[in-house]
Image (tube, rainbow, N blue to C red):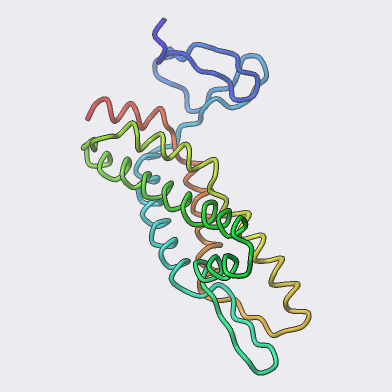
Length: 201
């Protein structure tokens, strides 16, 4: 049997055949019932459009302040990159590197790689180094923690509001929107459809 016809369950690791023609909209594991894959109509087209939206939101989220803080008449605002620099300059280089990696580098890598593989393929073109870009999407997806970062901002907002006037900047709303868009991409993205379209391109 061709390896391309085998599916590994993400929950119990059972290998099973995927030779049904036509492929069902949703496939479940024969042993544990976990979802093996779920197809959506125009899934690649939706993923391409959402990836472009995510890239725009990511640029806005990093270009505008996250929070503005007013304490004793002095007002301070900071972007995410500014917060990373502040952490590094205040003796927390490991924390700064962690925030930079999980909230800036990996989300950027994931979104740009998604745009690189899906948008040209939407128009029937397969870009060079397609496999490497797809592997980057998978790797970055494990480390991009936008939702954790948004939760951290919410916690910091509540704690800072106890002794200072805090306002949410445009950056935090863009990060929140980015979190929702990334969740929608995950729900619509079907790697098997992507590779099928890439093989035909």
